[in-house]
Amino acid sequence: MKIAVTATGNNLDAQVDPRFGRAHYFIIINSDTLEFKAIENLSAAAGGGAGVQSAQLIADEKVEYLLTGNCGPNAFKVFEAAGINVIVNVSGIIREAIKEFRDGVHKVSDKANVESHHGNL
Image 1 (cartoon, rainbow, N blue to C red):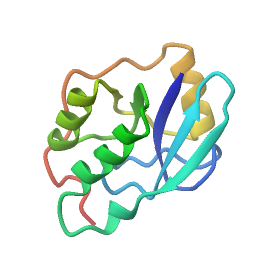
Image 2: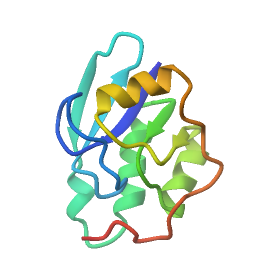
Image 3: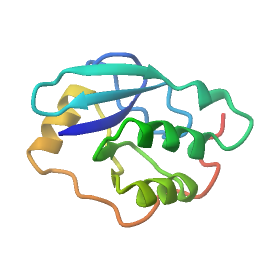
């Protein structure tokens, strides 16, 4: 299964970035094989609209799930429209978060868990 995780670094040993739109990286992972690619989030420094721009980037990757610490309402709407399941309140090392995901520890969210502009620098 193809999933995306917000990340502070470009590998599976990085921490899950608690911010979605302003995460440093997105790790796109095959949860079965752990094959991955890291995408630098160029929208992280955007003056506005980082969540929507980042959400569109993730939607273009055709993932089924997003694991992140927080997700605002504008990005969440993009994910709903794209049929991507969002899981929030994820933290720790990405490799461990993937294991927890496969073990069913995390539940899909039905709404954003922070207000707009929560992760601004």
